[in-house]
Amino acid sequence: MRRVVDLSFPITVQDPRGTVRMVPYRTIAEHAAMITLVTFDTHVGTHLDAPAHQVAGAPTLESVDLEKCIGPAAVIDLTSKRLPHQLIEVADLEPFAEQVQTGGRLLIRTDWSDQYGQPGWTDGYPALTVESAQWLVAREIVLLGIDTPSVAPIYLSRKLMVAVHAPLLRAGVVVVESLTNLRALGRPKVTFVALPLNLVGTDGCPVRAVAVEE
Image (tube, rainbow, N blue to C red; front, side):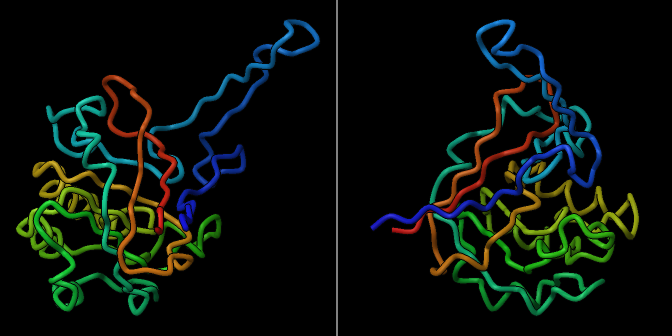
């Protein structure tokens, strides 16, 4: 039996980033069809980072290899790091080394997604250290997903934001941030899908991320 689990936050005008707008563009009464004009920033909700997000001159969204966005993914439980201002160190990842393989995908569960929409959502969330990012790159993963606002501790400094993102993005690792509902997964390995729109020249895009359990 196949089970599909939605791992995406809904995109609504109440989104905490405050960039979402939905305006009626056509109505059934006047035009025989309903069409809505929607605007949002490229990193709203559950989203994918293109290399250009943090690396000057790097490839933009349309260059992302979609094969990396679909396939088997290991789910690791790091809910022990869900308290504020706990960074994810290499020592936290090493026990899962067998699950972090060349060409693989990794989803990190912290349950910080429970804080979504609350005042502390973007402050103190679990994030990678530079060394952790480099460790994952050395293991040659192709996708990294996490249920926090970012893989990097942006709340500490812009320098760290770039230092954590850059090795991943330069290595072509697809980064998916702000996942949710990872606790609903019943298996340590799932088929993961997170496809962006085919937006040309952008630095990222919201995705509808799902896990498929067979």
